[in-house]
Image 1 (cartoon, rainbow, N blue to C red):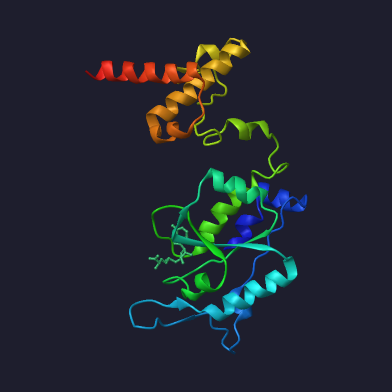
Image 2 (cartoon, rainbow, N blue to C red):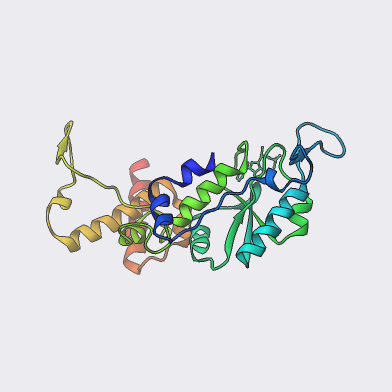
Length: 238
Ligand code: SAM
């Protein structure tokens, strides 16, 4: 499941260019019994199976020996919510990141108790396993490593980079099914385009994710402009 997704497109190229090194470990390879068991029934009864601690510890210890310092992440719906800021810190992390992917009911609680690990959630819903969550975090973090994306400038403007959503994009044709590209974008006036884009980013954020504005660093003019938009919106509703 993991290898095909992580060995495609940008992530594939990043690995070929040695900007990223992803290694996938099969927990069964670290199970001591002849059936290579990685799960067992829960103590105290109840539905589902629980991932055994011993193969997980064996895998982490082996990886530590090979890779040196590690930062251990446990994808879990009970963790802190993953966001763009966390992706940024992962992308700058000097240590190797280990994502321990749970399945079934999750893993024996002694994994978290017995090693320095952070639980991280990708959203308030339940997936069948940690792999998709790990892949989301790897993808979002890897694209922030310098050199992975063709155009680093595009990172500076995109959504969440400054606690704002991005402005809308348009490409050819100028008119499509009666809908025209905003005239300002055809004007060639770069300063006016920059101002328009900033205002559109503010408007997008105000309409879709007003909660983000609390953390955005805005100039006095921008704050005034946002206040004005809010007043106008209130007036048009009353
Ligand atoms: N019984 C667990 C609970 O209620 O907290 C849920 C287990 S879930 C079915 C199986 C595994 O999927 C988890 O151990 C975790 O690795 C992963 N997982 C599920 N939802 C996730 C989420 N929102 N974010 C990150 N990982 C998640």
